[in-house]
Picture (cartoon, rainbow, N blue to C red):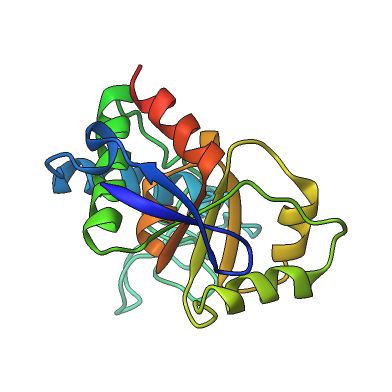
Length: 209
């Protein structure tokens, strides 16, 4: 798949980039995508939820009343889950939600996500660029010139660039990552995937391993 390379003003530079079929035109695997997205979202969970059980409640352990003869149910302690303020039965406990996925499966999921973006014509390739200073209006102007101001954008850079990252950080619909941080969830969550000529090469080298 051949794509024209644009500059930051949204104009064609005359250069073209050939997207590798081994990365951007595979047979998509939806189940691999599902597992990779599931793992990504699970890893975001803190897992610090906690409810006190009856052995953790502060209160007296005195038997409330005699076992028989009251006409009511027997009760052993005010900390019983049956009473207001008592412990909770099988309440949530701190846990780790993360789980393991094989590297090859994760790679397949990311190539599948990139393939879907290519099929939707949602990939924009830019020439390698930099901002002279950290200004949000620089990034706003960039997406405006590309006519994607109303789209969620994911910009993938070949290496960390503080000026570009900080210029986009205050925008809700913009996210900037490096090629080694690429994940299936961010690719699918973005309306437009912005790649630089350098990041295309980096991604193809990474997925060709």
